[in-house]
Length: 143
Image (tube, rainbow, N blue to C red; front, side):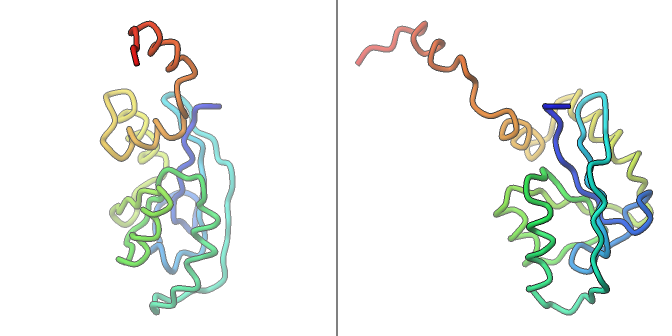
């Protein structure tokens, strides 16, 4: 799954998205590509309140480094800004949304033509095209 995206889900039961980002007790992090998904990590935190304490976010943001998105029930404005600054798309879902269903929806979106945030995440993960300079030569660049 070398072309897979890392996707995080705020969950306590590893089955449903049932947590607010800021006070999430745990995250399930999956590798997801068009056909497969694989649980990479289940990270747990202590008890955290939705109190506006920004320090608690840094540990979560560091954990999610390299993720394309984080699915949660809710997320505050400050957290959204910090996630976007790290190229992590926050995705709000309804309480009780099943992780397996969200993964299937994401895979279908990849196949059908990704939305703007997903296309950006896929392109960032792919990196530059190693043939891009040869293509420029073929175009006949003239200085």
